[in-house]
Image 1 (cartoon, one colour):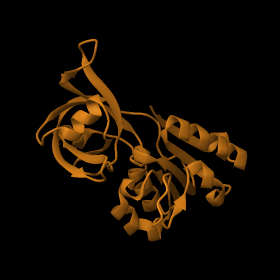
Image 2: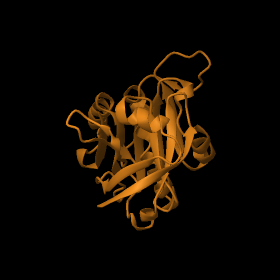
Image 3: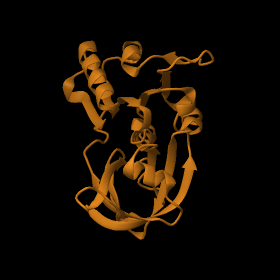
Image 4: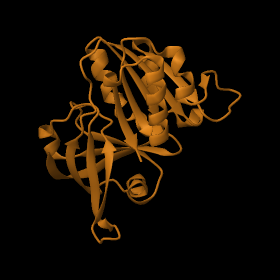
Length: 226
């Protein structure tokens, strides 16, 4: 685990609610993290009720070999709002990496994401594809405009199975409709190592549905976002 200062290098408005924040720091060269892990972020002048810097965990959305560290930040309060509005050059405190939410040995992987829960899956999918594994991603978001990494996933779609579903009615949407857990039975099959990331209620419901379908509990890996 390292502690260091990173600089906001670039910001990309990915969707109306989500900004991709790219950080740079010399320490990244020695930051040995695995796809799926997360880091802690704080800013010295953004203090909580205890007068200490507010700190929040963010999954790393970039690959270990990237020259930058990418965060997928949804519009929210406190630190999330600060990061979305932070000017280029803003300094941030970084600690990490943490977690064991990474690829375990398997021949095929099922990823189920809700909203910004797709962030850790971006580098994990790339790693799995580089190792010539079978990959299925079921990705749920509210509206078509909330599709994070749309262009990137569309380019890769021929290399893995991409299932997108919206949770709000849209007459022009041609993909699946409904929450991820409601369509899970269409795409699950025995032998998957299953990974779930997103809001707590969604993660718990998908976990329960996977068990009911016959998925081994030992082959389900979760990351809940409060």
